[in-house]
Length: 246
Ligand SMILES: Nc1ncnc2c1ncn2[C@@H]1O[C@H](COP(=O)(O)OP(=O)(O)O)[C@@H](O)[C@H]1O
Ligand SMILES: [Mg+2]
Image (cartoon, rainbow, N blue to C red; front, side, top):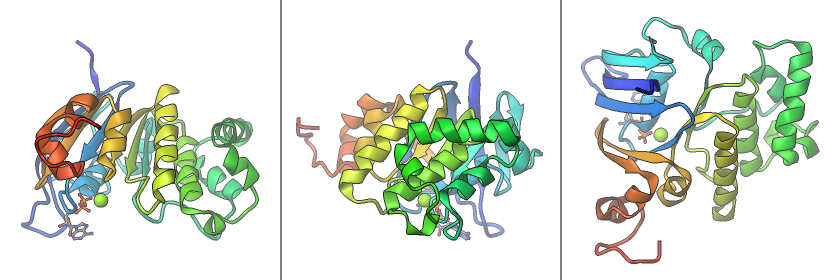
């Protein structure tokens, strides 16, 4: 039996006492997978990522990372164990340069390794090399997302949680960011991707989950969900019966 890298079982969590935003959310991710989580605004997608990263306490249920329950593991230790997280907003320090942002992402690694890591990541994202000494606040939206991902990758995570990396990007940049995400996955990083651009995200994903009202309502292989009429109508802007050109 292949052990899951991340296991979320019947998790309840919320911000206000007595009000659960996550209401029995369950997902499972295996080593090497790229998994997309879609769902309407307010469904609890960002909340689920925060609960996984222990930025929000679980009220009920169980989360395991690398086979170990995470309930009592503080966020910085989750990072040390190999979990990376790129939040939806405010994911770079605008007044610091690209180089400084990358160095901060490597707080847990030492001198020479930091340099090597920056070399590797700027090879992966050449635009960051061009912008190396520029303040992050002067980058375009797409460049900023790449920097945020590169920063999270500095710590060499085994699992990367990405919250809407294509939000607020011009449509032609969305494909580019998706391509980079797929490349990161091909390098061996397991990814949980939350996305509004459901079609593009599912196209690059092994599997997907649909979250509604704080729990997953269906899941399947990326291709399968792309052709599922329930998803088509709600998330891909396709009226049932499905048109063939997706
Ligand atoms: N910091 C917060 N305090 C209180 N409620 C919040 C907070 N963040 C999110 N919520 C609420 O939790 C629900 C789910 O939000 P969120 O997880 O951001 O949804 P999604 O990412 O799927 O759009 C929403 O009703 C939202 O208003
Ligand atoms: Mg969100």
